[in-house]
Length: 167
Image 1 (cartoon, one colour):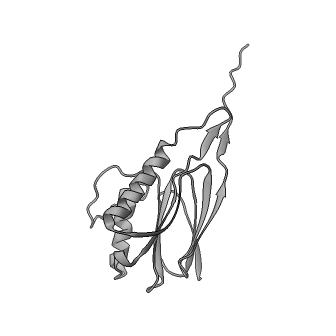
Image 2 (image 1 turned 120 degrees about the vertical axis):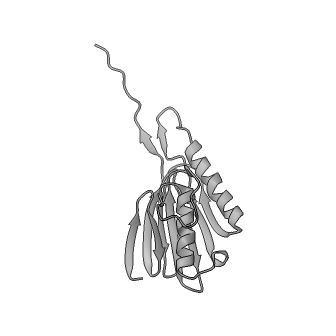
Image 3 (image 1 turned 135 degrees about the vertical axis):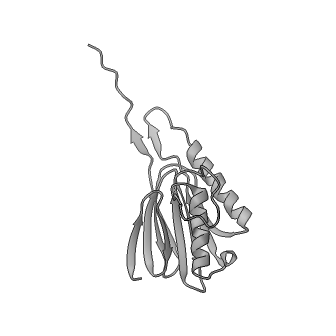
């Protein structure tokens, strides 16, 4: 491994011999690993998509899953790889915020999960691992020298209910 990279929401990375790390809540990360070439890529998206994006688009917003997926496919072509040879892994989509008396809506995470799984099915991708849904956050490490992904889970972020003051 020669480098290290941290992905913020909406960031994208494709390469080799790098340790890529990110922190996921309701966001979803898609990793692609090409064992023969020892290269891979990852996206960290916040929402499924806002619009259709042409496969050749240069204006990509990685915050949206549809655009992040287009970017990953562009990188696969740029590196002369075959998408169907990739090992795909999916992570995230959790309910990551809660209050003391109730859980917050998990709709965003669920939408992201459905979207990512739909993308994989449409592309005929082989998903070799998933760690999706649930509660809390995930700290993810993707080693582009081996294709291994490590996940460490954390609890949901507790938000204190606003106290009403009178007087």
